[in-house]
Amino acid sequence: MASRPVTLGIDLGTTSVKAALLEAAPSLPSGFVVLASCARAAKAETESAVAGPQGREQDVTRIIQALNECLDALPRQQLRRVGGIGVSGQMHGILFWKAGQGCEWMEGGPAFVFEPRAVSHLVTWQDGRCNSSFLASLPKPESHLSVATGFGCATIFWLLKNSPEFLKSYDVAGTIQDYVVAMLCGLPRPLMSDQNAASWGYFNTQSQSWNLDILEMAGFPTHLLPDIAEPGSMAGRTSHTWFEIPRGTQVGIALGDLQASVYSCMSQRTDAVLNISTSVQLAASMPVGFQPLQTPDPAAPVAFFPYFNRTYLGVAASLNGGNVLATFVHMLVQWMADLGLEVEESTVYSRMIQAATQQKDTHLTITPTVLGERHLPDQLASVTRISSSDLSLGHVTRALCRGIVQNLHSMLPFQQLKEWGVARVVGSGSALSRNEVLKQEVQRAFPFPVCFGQDVDAAFGAALVMLQRDLSQKEP
Image (cartoon, rainbow, N blue to C red):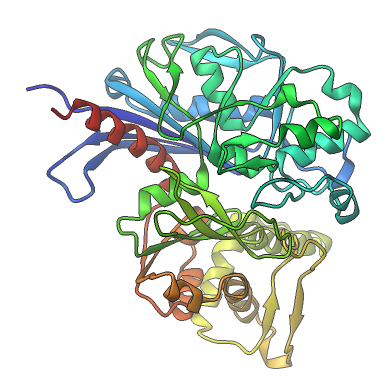
């Protein structure tokens, strides 16, 4: 009997790297079984030399180290069976490297690994260097999507103005997932799906092309922009044996983590997918043939992102999710330190969730937008309806979790989901999977049945795209 296809899915997230091995199982409703999965914290945050405190950058070497740790933890006998690799990752961000010099392959114990070489930091989607006045000075894109701080093209414009010498050191650029695919395949220039290109700004999804004329008129270094390829297509084949994955293994074009998460969760077109990880996304499928208006509206809280087969997702993408809870925990730990007491963040997190689980309701109201929102970049967080009876840790944590969900509701009213034909909400993401209070608030807020998935959804999605492509090619 012929062996069933095995695919490796990788997700390069903001706080962690995840990997999953999937095997085709046509007899199961899902169509696959999970052979193994692994997640490692990236711990990649680093200071920005040029943007100061507004910059949010990550050390690419640490991200690849976390990726290597993930691969090293997967069973070798299953890695030898891998016939395809799917990769997704955090959207909007950008890193630069020298073509042909982005990494070096070397023996890492029993396996070959690649290590970054002539590579910049990753400027992430959380970057805040492009303020409102700077964004207003940029040329208007020919796209249905507006440009925000943390978007790849906005970051290049900022560097062009504030650090032009930096850009002269590099000749190609991509998202972190584009970089990994390019290194695995030995590509001289990265390839980019429309999913990631749209997340950079200045990309027209209808013509599948960058706004080259607009950008060149503004002096933008358009040679840095990657070539575009269809999501679900092949980027190339592995140029080396990698953790016993055979040389010559097919590697897919890198996907956006949003689209990969949705792909793994959305079993019906009437599903909406809620992902709460570092940030929050609520996505629903648009009808086949839907085309967004080609006039960008920076104040619109809902954006339409490319999905697969030239369809779109309607998405409310909030900047404030698990990172808000992490900020609250960090604040509590800092207060304790100021009082001369030491306590671990993990202890604070578990205790505050436990306290909020026992506190079923609260009148306290928290608007949790400590990072603003792309459509309201200057909005800050606030706490209202404060009374002496609502000041316990349970009250505050319950109000914070409720605020994260209510903020999403303000961006995409649930009545709109009904009008789009949504009948069920599928919840996923690391912040949601380990927070019972957040789950309760999601179930309380949505007028639909809610089911909860697993943490490695984007890695599953990236693998599934490859697995289903492999199976379709084997059909007679």
